[in-house]
Image 1: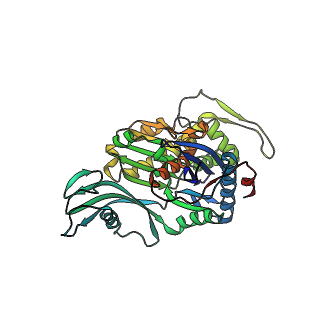
Image 2: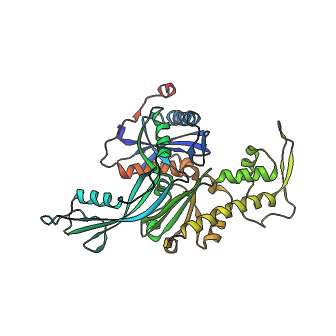
Amino acid sequence: MSNNDLIVGLEIGTSKICVVVGETRPDGTLKILGVGQAPSRGVRKGEIVDFETAMKCVHEAVVDAEQKSDVMIRSVYVAVAGGHIQSFNNRGCVILPEERDEIDDQDVEDVKISAREVSIPAQNAFLHSIIQHYHVDGQDGVLNPIGMLGGKLEADFHIIHGVRTRIQNTIRCVKELPLEVEDVVFSALASAQVVLTQHQKNLGALVVDIGGGTTDYILYVDGAVKQSGALAIGGDHITNDISMGLRIPMARAEKLKTEEGSCVLGNCLPGETILLKDDSGFAGKEIERETLNTIIHLRLRETFELLKRTVEEEPFINYVGAGIFITGGCSLVNGIDHLAGEIFEMPAHVTHAQTLSGLTSAVENPQFSTAIGLLKYAQAVQVDRPRRGITRIFGRFFSGMR
């Protein structure tokens, strides 16, 4: 196996740090070699708030991934999230010189630069310029204009940007380890690479990635990204509501949410209870199941209603034909697809990474959609890009020496 066959995705989440090591096969498929995890500390609402602590957690997850996949990791693709992420659509335009009428690579690059010639907040930096459609002399639906004849090239782009220092904090956290950062990718864009098929993107689809501290979203119409962003609200807010409402420790609240909770109301027997056994520092307690479900329901309803109001600021949600695809750790809450479908008034599905080989348990866990999606994103963009080193090692001894 050559160095160029290996790709590593790193997600620094609010609840967990996840590192996925993948291998590209000659037939273009991806195989998952190993998944490393560590509890996340020093991260709030998808953003680093304690640099040293977060760095230690990332290091733990990287070492775990190295040991499980038998590779030494030298560079990674990193996901970024947080409420500071914003986006807009814009059109770029390039007029070809009179002596030339064939569109070339430089024209395509120039039209991308032209689309970015728009004012964004001074503290922000561009993250992605994603092509939607090209137009040559007014002709719509051009997929690849290079080599075509024309005098005017226009292109519509979806542009994602965020606060520069917050993005740089994530990059610096990784570089201090030291690891090289191959690229920085918006979380929902990464997730969409593995939870949606091209057909679903063409039909129109909204991906909602609900993590511990943020809810990231990306919306496709006619195969192109039309909307994206992040809300600073996630599964940890539900856990906190349960902890406060039932007056139980956060760890117990998290366990209740994942193992017993549901956001569907009226499905349990009248008076049905859940017994919490006592342990050190906690006296046992009996709680009503419907009370637990009501707390979960109200917070998730608020999240989906806020998201709906946000995406309805533009008309694209009306062209979503395939429905809503929910992923991320919080998507495992029982009945979340029914609640989303009710609020958005369209089909909703809980989903995970599709069509990959390797560790089945990792691929089928929605918690890993972003990290696995980073591999697919990397595979798409690095066709001609020289890679820095991620080297295969023999035996697990060396990875323990990080």
